[in-house]
Length: 106
View 1 (tube, one colour):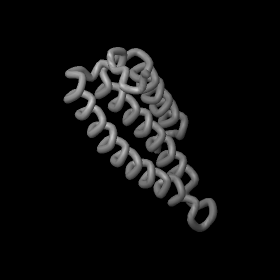
View 2 (cartoon, helix red, strand yellow; view 1 turned 45 degrees about the vertical axis):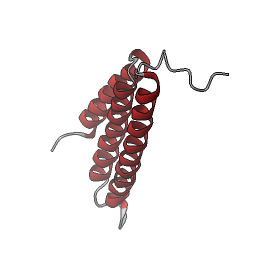
View 3 (cartoon, one colour; view 1 turned 60 degrees about the vertical axis):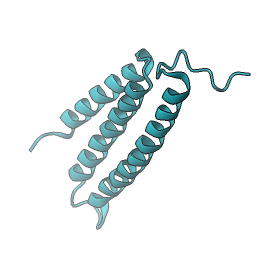
């Protein structure tokens, strides 16, 4: 059995890569992919913690998995909406570079 620390280190590394992707990228599609990577890092952490707490309480081992399912659902909705917005911006401006998109400016 693998210790919880290794899963937490993997989750922290994936989350850090996701943060770097959000901060360093200019393409809106890559930013959305980095946000998905961060959400999946949180899911790994939640499921690892839930399996580590197995046997503590009656439903303690399902809490992390239930929250992970909600996060997956929110992530799917976020990707659908974000890609629709990105496609609309590409049609209007012919770019998905977030530095060049100024639709909210007066």
